Amino acid sequence: MRVGIIGGGAAGLAAAYELTKRGHYAEVFERAPFLGGQASTFPVGGGKLERGYHHLFVSDTAMTELVHELGLGNKLAWLESKVGLFYEGKIWDFATPLDLLRFTPLSVIQRLRVGLWTFVLQKTRNWRKFEQVTATDWLKRHMGTRAYEVIWEPLLRGKFGAYYDQVSMTWLWGKVYLRVASRGKGMQKELLGYPMGSFGEVFDTLGARIREMGGDVHISAGVNRVIVEDGRAVGMEVQFPGEDPEDRQYDAVIATTPSYVFVRLVPPMPKEYEAKLTGVRYLSAVLVILVLDRPLSDKYWMNVGDRSLPFLGVIEHTNMIDKSLYGGNHIVYLTNYPSRDSELYKKTSEDLLEEFIPHLCKLNPDFDRSWILEFHHHKVDGAQPIIGVNYGKHIPDHQTPFKHLYLANTTQIYPEDRGTNYSVRMGREVARMVMEDAGNASVGSNTGE
Ligand SMILES: Cc1cc2nc3c(=O)[nH]c(=O)nc-3n(C[C@H](O)[C@H](O)[C@H](O)COP(=O)(O)OP(=O)(O)OC[C@H]3O[C@@H](n4cnc5c(N)ncnc54)[C@H](O)[C@@H]3O)c2cc1C
Image 1 (cartoon, rainbow, N blue to C red):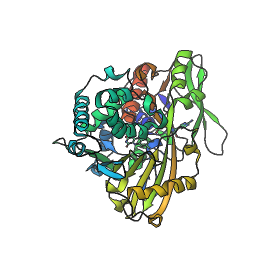
Image 2 (cartoon, rainbow, N blue to C red):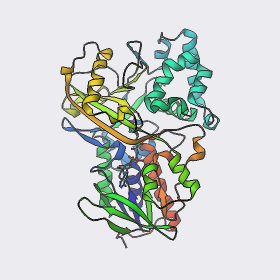
Image 3 (tube, protein in one colour):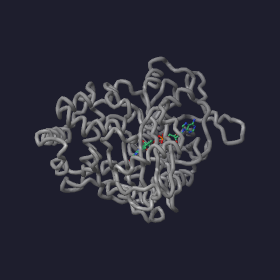
Image 4 (cartoon, protein in one colour):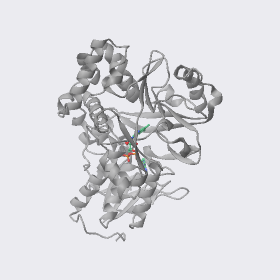
């Protein structure tokens, strides 16, 4: 069987890997000049750094297994994370229940109430009861307005920007549940995983493995459209740089692009399915990455609970990952998740930097711009689908209304928050679905016949 795959991120590569492993031919087309999609990397200080900060949770078993399968298990480190909250001019430790008890901006009663309900969430398995309520409403009702505004609103704003109060409680439940799963034995410390050669190395190795097994993986190669005849996908129009578009025939096509891209690649679909594709809203990630000659803080992950700062999260990568991987320098991400029509999204790199710099001394009074050796600016579109109430009812099926055409994108990950782990799991699952539908799950030819 020949399968065409649109997108060389975690989902597309995992699907191709699963297919080629079972003896089928898979051909991946990635429009960008690199693999890895949202988890892709760029060179910094002699190492490779993700365009957007990345780590794994202990519960990310699909990704962890893949890393081991690729022979990179010895590079996967599990490290203690240092979490903080910037509030009222101070960086508070915010990693353990004890930190919560010491968090004096809330009264003792308020702290206990947050602790109690967080514990209840950690023990709750039935997430469906949260589907119809926003996180804002649930948190205010159970933990109180003050605790919501101080602790939870910054977290929701950090991930969903202006849409923070529309997010479903199911999403927040998933976050709390997974973070607990990422605690080491003894329940106090959170462990996060990182492949020491970068996520980019994992996806480049995956691409190489697919090629070794007879598949093809192309970068700088976009798909213009999926060719559909008599209601079934039969091929794709693909485009290599500087060449005319060409048609390629496949027995099945898997698309891993965001939904708003996918609708443009296919002929009009039945209204109900199309409405699910066009109904989902996405935020982009806007990241300013500073390469500093010294640390900014001692935290790996810091939520910003002070709205006067123009960024919502500060991730100091080298407070978890050894700085020697980046020439001994310190790496700090300043993050926001705006929509593509926002002012922040449209700003130039220089304007963003000038806007952000004056606020860095709030995090560290000694900060001086001379500490900045380099800065980088990345925008990741389609970075975060907005998970509103009753989200589960609006998820499109992997099997689209066109026969032999499948969709595997981040909008279909639920109730967990999207991440490389779930894209890998989904890519492999959809590949199996394609093979089962073709009725030959374990036989086939990888010669392209
Ligand atoms: C700032 C940020 C931080 C994150 N942090 C973490 C983290 O800590 N841990 C974690 O596990 N996950 C994290 N994630 C999420 C994770 O990166 C994604 O969920 C995952 O990588 C998505 O993989 P995917 O293959 O589903 O989609 P994508 O990575 O979006 O891949 C889709 C690919 O399709 C390509 N494409 C689009 N249109 C076409 C076309 N017409 N032709 C050919 N190719 C096309 C795109 O270029 C892209 O490479 C983060 C994401 C962001 C943005």
